Length: 524
Ligand code: MLC
Ligand code: AMP
Image (cartoon, rainbow, N blue to C red):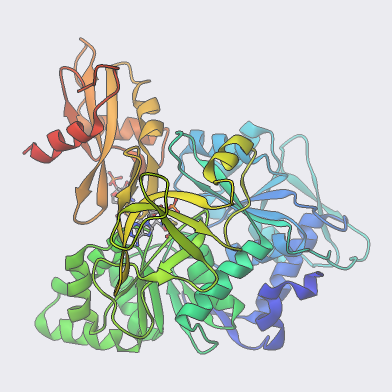
């Protein structure tokens, strides 16, 4: 496969005049995106013919620079590693070390922290804006050992962009796991194509669609579902730099998107903004939603009350679906037909799903089981973690999701929860309790601790920490949150804190997290 055959570029090439992206007041055509991404590709290649799966970290906010850099890295034969802008310095450093990239692409907004992190890891950095601007046939940069940045350098005429086979790695997306430190989920170009094709088929994504994307662009939800899928089919994507309910309502009217995708917390906030408006304004807002023919929720369980209220607010039923970073989208409610509250429907086209019962057998309808997934969209490996990769699959290649479900004959699957108490989903972000415990244990006033997820109307679950303090005394909650945020992203900082004399443990010394959850639930 050559650069010109990358399926992602198909729609862009066939209609370059069409609008691909809307960012604020600016519109960018597919042709502009192709040209900008070619400049990025040449910038990264620096006279070479192929990046040969060199990894490039993207620390760039949602916008044209992000998309051009993503396409450019792929067109140069590289692997895209999008990292969260919200990561504090130590988290960025440990992710960059794990990813071991050739270069970190930064943006003016992220430059200081990103540059410091890249320098601390001994990795060269470059500005995405520079890559976008340079004259594409003449721009080249070479690493500058003094600053660890890149120098401008004029190169020979540009060679053709490389042929990129579908079996090559495309993405490494980090996700938290039960083992504490986040793992890099590697997907190939073929995995991505299958994920995109199955979404487009199930939801009938068409060139006439406009998707409003207010999701972060370091997770599959924002990247694959709400960005790549529409761009693959020549549709239009409006990118918001961050989620803001008032802005989203405004954009429903101004841009008239046909599709909105979000995590349940976003719908909670959109509903709240609607409820805070006057009756007349509410009618206006609901009218604005009339252009949306599809509002999709995923990444965490959609509470029943949100499902019901959204149907009143937007005058149509939300479509809930289920997926994972490792698999892309797995289960979906129907585009046509009843979207039953509390259910996530049936497998996406091309995706195989089964439930493994507690005895290891395949669960019968109505019986609870663990969800296992197989299909061409499923990831290929955890980056540089062969043992964890092997442990994630059974011998027939079924990926173990760690989620529990039951199959209903009429409405499809109902997600019942997770096997591990150490995984928390808050605002759609997956968080490892163990990772937070490791950080809390470093605090001089904390002798022992355990972290659990407590159900919450807005966040789905809230990170909650039970602490046993040293004789020096307890730390006030805001202080402890601020301290955790020095090491971990804000959403990992415990929202609820409880100080105990001792943690509940079983006879083997293992913390009884279910008991701990009950303690939090009973607390005033
Ligand atoms: C922010 N805060 C959170 C939080 N995000 N607390 C708990 N959980 C979170 N996720 C804290 C902040 O630190 C801050 O506290 C306070 O809440 C308010 O922050 P905010 O700035 O108002 O929040 P906001 O930036 O608006 O973030 C909320 C959000 C965001 C819902 C927009 O969490 C988000 O974008 N979530 C989407 C994540 C996602 O894309 N997941 C997909 C994973 S892929 P303080 O103390 O600092 O004031 C996947 C597969 C699949 O799951 O199926 O899709
Ligand atoms: P991530 O690792 O961030 O990709 O998160 C994937 C996890 O999100 C899954 O394993 C589920 O636990 C959860 N998830 C995604 N969609 C849903 C949904 N619709 N209902 C319940 N949980 C979901």
